[in-house]
Amino acid sequence: LDRFVVEQDDAKKVLSVAVCDHYNWARRCVEEPDLRTKNYTKPNILISGPTGSGKTYLVRTMAKMLGVPFVKADATKFSETGIVGEDAEDVVRNLVDVAGGSADVAQY
Image (cartoon, rainbow, N blue to C red; front, side, top):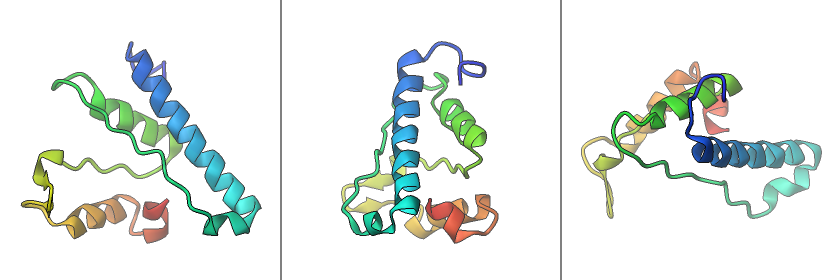
């Protein structure tokens, strides 16, 4: 990640640790199928900052390095009661499209 993203050291570290934790959990679930029924909280991350600070670039670069689909959704369309404007299914549909039409790839 350091080869592509200048500075942003804290953001790179937090994102890398969260991705590593998630992949370690996924690997353990493959090795021990009983773990799939355990309650697991995925490490979601909120990235905030001013326009042009590299938030999208950082996440898009990480996704490309990992070979996973990436879709950017505008959080200003979300409200306390749900999504305003864009339908939640549209966001999911976009993710499946980016995943080459594979719901399995988009899910994980």
